[in-house]
Length: 556
Image (cartoon, rainbow, N blue to C red; front, side, top):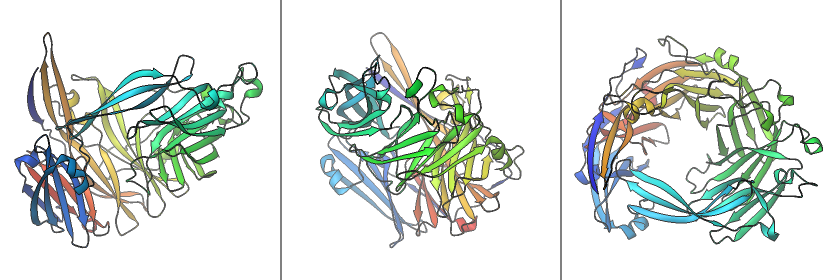
């Protein structure tokens, strides 16, 4: 096969709005890096508040058996203090650099997956997961191949009904939620009522089996592995499952008594039931778009409908299509047994509490249509923040996809009452110099994080906005065909928005990089001086240099 690489940089001009403050960073520095480092990736960033230093380490493959580390160390004023190169055998690198995740150009993990058959019966299959390192995207690309079906029964030969499962790719195991099938004439809905949580090894050994009997039939509403705010570095996350009561025509005496009583299960990666909670929902057709674990608490959030709640079992409710709008937004926090609060906010309230920059002509209002609702963050004062971004479908260029537009930040108090809905235009612009599609910067969402300064009245909304894209086209020529594959990654700049969360107003907006410097995707920033300041980490326009910039919130 013949492969040729064509690298091109697609830059875009974007309108600098009047509210943008073009002030300088507290300090800024660019450093030329070696050719080796330029062909590698930033594998680790470490800060030391005692020595007041930040170390940025590049990783690149030296030979098939060796890997090279290059570490650039700066003081907090961004003076370059040292540059250290270290070439080491790949097999020894992990012991010296505990954060080192590179396992070679490719590796394979065998394990299990699960699915229902045509009758809903729980079926286990072998799978083979191949991880291939992509030096352009600077990450492993994962491909999964499903292999043979395996004969599996629950303990004591029970025939199980598939509900959901969680795959642990590190060891090939699965943790599954399945229903115990009963006699179709005597207990026709038992598989929706009597659940089993079990952990299965690749050799089909059942390491644990926990029974969860809900007393009435329930339908799966939500299932996801969820990160813990208090343990962000955990290798495996707990699994959160939400189940909604079933009812309706034909169920008769088997119908759940209360359509609003939902159940939340928290399950550990080793198959243990950590907690089982119930709460009374205030919205039906609830589309849970995200969840966060905070110690013993679980936050769940997403849009739904509050009207006619008492008549709506989950599986009977009208499922809205892409063009429909939700009327409400529900935010829930449960503890190990019940709910701390269940709050519902109408779209009318969102509109009334929407805030915009002074010189932005139109309000950016969340109106209930489908948007990309993302992270939930808990502030130091207990307030709750949810980030979202609007989008639209675009058919221009060589690919039909989502064009990302306005950005939202929803601010709730400690009990889930909406305080403010901040909305701002997105600054991404079309980079379709060569046909649009994957080369269009607007096809990539802006990412965000929140930063709290010393003054609790203010919060800093750190947005990483796509400015342009960098693409590589690979041409593969076979015997009869030629295939072109284009991989693109967005180049993002930092935009910092200072918000007065007490008054509900935009204070200042500053963007940095000036189209010359772009953030690193994996390590865009590091917090210094006990979390009171930030150092941005990025690259120069031509990718031949390392860019670092110090942000001091007291100057904005």
